[in-house]
Each structure stands twice: as C-alpha cells, then as structure tokens.
Image (cartoon, rainbow, N blue to C red; front, side):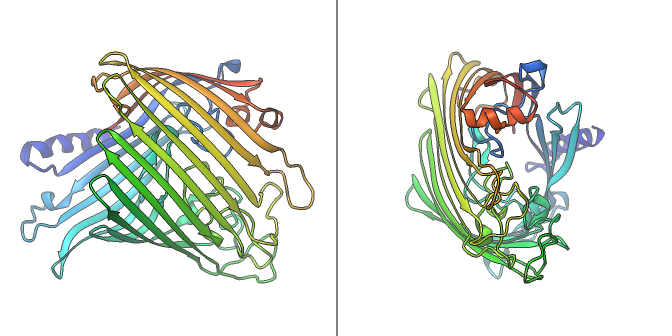
Length: 448
C-alpha cells in the first residue's frame, strides 16, 4: 500500500513542476460482493465451462490493474532531438479460489517494458522491448480481446501504420494439458511468434486491419506418450482481416482469422483469443499436421442518443488438432466449436441513474471426455442468460462506456440437460446445484 501512495504522490508532483507529467498513474478494476444464492456461496460465473467471460462478464471475480508510466525524457530533461521515452509497469491483482480479493489475493506483473519514439536516419519509428499487453480491440461486454491478442514478452517496431513484433516466452501463459506446455515437455517447449500488422485507412469512417503471424518452436520431446521422433520442432501460420467502421457515436468491428498447425488457437484457456494457445492433440511424431482453427467476431457499440444506447457481439470459433492424433490424456479433445451471442440495451434514466439489460446465448459442442477410442461425449451444451443491472454513474455521463460506476447485478441462466447432467458450467464447477444458475452482486468498476 505504501508503494502505491508514493507513486501517487510522484504523479501529483509531476503536474506541479511541468506541463507533461514525469509520472502517470492509470488503473482498471472491478471489486464488490456477490453470491450464487445456493448455500450462500460466493458468486460464480454462469457461462459454459472453459469459455471465460464469453457469455457475459458481469459475474467476473474481483480484479485490479495498477499502471505507472515514467516519461523518462521529462525526468532527465532531454532536450536535443527530444525523443519520447516511456517505461510502463502494470501489476495485476485478482482473487483466487473463487473468493473475494480481500480474502485471497494473487499479484503479478502483467507489463514491464520500455518504449521509445525517436527518429533514426531521418525515419520516425517506435520501438518497445519487454513484456506487454500487445493487443488492440476488445468486446467489453464479454471481456474478450479479439483478432490480434499477442500479449507476451518480446520486442517490436512501428513505422506509420505498420507494426512488426517478435513475441516469446509464451509457455508461461499456458493452460493445463496443452501439449506445448511446461508439464508435458521434457524442457518446457518454447514458442515464438513473428507478427506483422498493417492498417489501411480507407476513408474517415472505414479502415482495414491486416494480420499475419508465423509461429515456431525449438526442438523438444514429450514425456508421455513417447513419440517415434523424440525431438521435434513445429510451426504454424495465421492470417486475418478486421474491418472497423466508426461514425459519430457508432462503432463496429468485424473480423475473421484462420490459423494452421500450432497457430490454431485459442485453446480452452478461458482468457481471450490468443492464437498461440494451440488446440487439440499432436500426431505420433509430436507435430500438428492438418490442424487448423477459424475465428469470426462481430461487435458494435452505439450511443443512440441521450436516452439510451445498445451494444452487441457474436463470436464463433472452430478448431481441430492434428490428423491421425495421438491423444494426450483422456480429457483433451481434438475438435471443438462454440458460438456466443450477446446484446445489451442500456437506458439512461437520469444523469446519474442508468439501467442495463443483457441477454447472452451460448452453444458449445463438448468432447472433453472423448479420447478417440473409448469414452463419453456429452454433446451440445446450451445456455440462455438474462441480466438486469441498475447502475449509478457519479460523473453524470450518458454513455455505454461511462466509468466509474457502481452496479447492482442480478443474472439468471437456464441450461439444457447436457449442461445440467454433466456440470458443464462454471456455476456447477463451483459446487452449486439446481436446474438453473443465479448470481446477485453489488460491484464497482473503473478505468482511467
């Protein structure tokens, strides 16, 4: 707590002695109290299993980010050529074991990088080295970062509308059971991504965003099963395009992405669209020949007028592992698809009181219990979820994205028999029972 107070005081003092601050402080967070009603358990997500916040994010646990930015050119009073030099440090704090952040707090560093805007050989260029959130657009109502989420450790350059980066050290962001993770490989297979992005500005309202990735690994071998080729490398390629339309208070993003071999993610990591978390099982040589993944996303946000606004999204994902796979464990499927759709109309009742309504629909073809020879495939899981949330907005801003705010949330989810009988929702995984899921909570959320 003391270190955050010191940083905050430095942030304030920087405004006293200079126009551009020496230090900046930013934060994003949500925290509150909640219940799943059943046996007074702490509120848990109602979405289908392994989907993260897809299906609605109102039931997410406590989470806080605190970011400090040091503008080094101001600290050292660099005048000649005046490059912009930023050091960025972001901490993540979240609750563990489905409880409140005050009871069980996990803290780590999410970002730590140096970024320089400078002119080299009369060419203006931006450079960064370190660990950072390397991503762009997100679907706020599903907390889903779309299209180009390459969050990790590496370095990159930007010239004009073109970005190139090499992102590495990705095995640390693995999910359990991934064949490219630390647990199953002798030395912990390292994965690298070379990513190229380019933005084409068509006119003042339309732009196209192009993405190309090349994934590759060093040589390593799996512990179990032992493959015919005991040390092998692998690769994957990915391409995508996103169209962005913005006019006035209306924004729409649509994207499609195709990845092959080890770029067929996202796997079931429950956290966004990271292409490097590959899905499925390898073949008997330990490679992903024949694997691929397809991702479609649609998202719009529209502040219609000072009376109401509406936002919505759709995400479809399909992925398949290697041809003729060797199954790694009995709970790792080799094929999946899922669909999530949501809409949120929001009424601005007064300057400070707003009312959210949300509907989410999810489908997922579960094959978690299929090993290719024997086993049980539960089939298609379906969820319908309804949310009502009165919101207090102290800033008086009549906008869908107004923050900070305090919201009272009640959500009710209905599941088909496949989900109920097999416990295929995070609601049931937390130990709740019943034919439907409930969530009630009072939460604050902010970003600045």
